[in-house]
Amino acid sequence: MKKIAVITGATGGIGLATAKALGKAGYTILVNGIDDAQAEVALKELKELNIEAEYFHFDVTNEEEVNKGIKAMGDKYGHFDVLVNNAGGLGGRSPFEDMPTDFYRRVLALNLDSVFYATRAAIPYLKEGKDASIINFSSNAGWNAGGPGAGVYATAKGAIITLTRALAKELVKYGIRVNGVAPGTIDTPFHQATKINNPALFESFKNNIPMKRLGQAYEVANVIEFLVSDKASFLTGEIIQVNGGQDFL
Image (cartoon, rainbow, N blue to C red; front, side):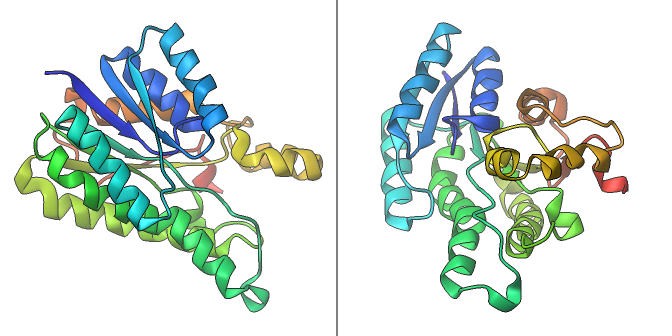
């Protein structure tokens, strides 16, 4: 039986790095995203590495689209062995005092609702998998409450920590492990706007990391590969911080 990994938001950044890591480990990768052009490039990169992959277009913030997309994946492949809830984003910055309600809802939808929708839809297919795992994405912001204007993003990522532990308790009876990663500042397109608009701020990020460098996407992907492997078979409900010691400061 083929090993199947579903990765949301996997057309670039940490999601694509994870697709490559799990693909090299023998998984067929079901790539989710909403940028079809970027997805085409991602699939080309995966296929050049001899990784079997297929793209499914759906918006993870849209409940109906998620239900249809996950069902299409499940109907075709029959089971999932891994679900990586990678999709998310800062969504912009706003202090709470001036925060429009639609901004608040949008950031929560992208970083919290999306995980609930995808996980709920995927559970029946994970039950059919072998030693199945779910990996959720929190963030260093889930501990330190985030930088200026990132409070609602941090709130969502803090909720992911609790959601991960709750799912771990609920799904352990089915043999499904649920863990998470909490990246610090990783050099990906996530920070592209800051890099362009405020390069001094972007460079200063390194000063807040004891290792004095930014993380790389593959360094997060390597942790995910470990978490879904037999080497982590007695781990569930854990959040691994991948941040070069950033949480120490």
